[in-house]
Image 1 (tube, rainbow, N blue to C red):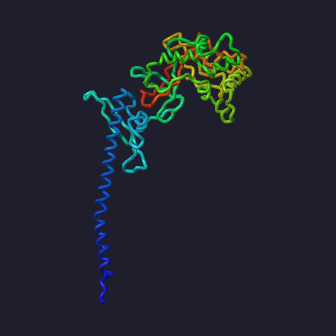
Image 2 (image 1 turned 45 degrees about the vertical axis):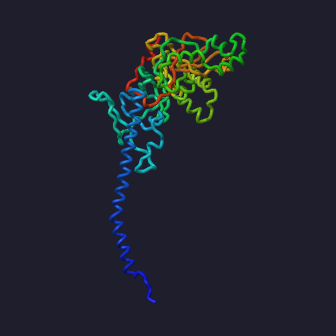
Image 3 (image 1 turned 60 degrees about the vertical axis):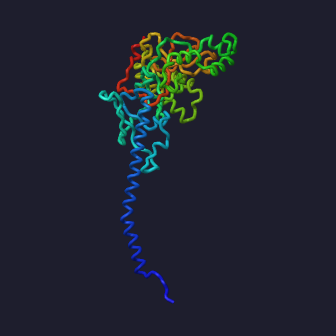
Length: 368
């Protein structure tokens, strides 16, 4: 019987035909897919621009200096989701760049632009920033930490409104203690439990309109002391327990043993440096603008949130504060004559108005 089958030449002809078809159609398909991805990319950019537009409309005039928004800011504020910034051209990557925007007087509105090349500014500990704390108020802060899109900073001056007790006797009693009859042990425990009630009340009242600040509180003594090499030395050896008392004692032993005599900020800095005590020094900006806030009663020191362990002074009635010389000190928690409030705040980078190149402060030397 005669067999029906393709010959080798016929098979090669078919394969050759398929190859020709593939050569013709593959670029068409590839171009179609590429165009589709690029179109999706453009739509994605439009979506992000629209999210930025809604964000600025809802939150007001941000970044009067920078005029740019990161995608993370829009995500944190709920205007985008993580998946909204995946790059349609390569879903394993996120979209590059940020949103730039500028006010147009002629159009009386913001003009938005997606930019792949824009570089968002970076900030470091000690940078001085002007930030928008409410729709109508700005403050200057020194950077303590940078956590992603959030800045943790301390104000460059005490809040206006006068000096205040850490916790008054009345507030202590109202919180559940009895100032006149509590034992030292009970009073010490209560101070740790109640915290700086009076100072916190004043803080919340003075800053009640700061609707662009996510957190605000008195700095702990550790928040400030961690800026020293002394803290880093203890941290590396795992000995930061009772940090405040250790620092205070070691610092004053060093001062005494090296006959460091000084009465002003810069003079003390020079004398301590000359004696080899650099590790105890705090940055100058820790104590700038004390008693120079436009309110002469704002204080020559500021409270921390940290009470003293009463075993150190055999008295449970003291809390730590920082004074005009930039040193850790202490005072009676019920005394309201000297210490004001200099809060730490958490705020989004989107609220940064500008980075200030020169410190705006009055030298502690000028404080009598």
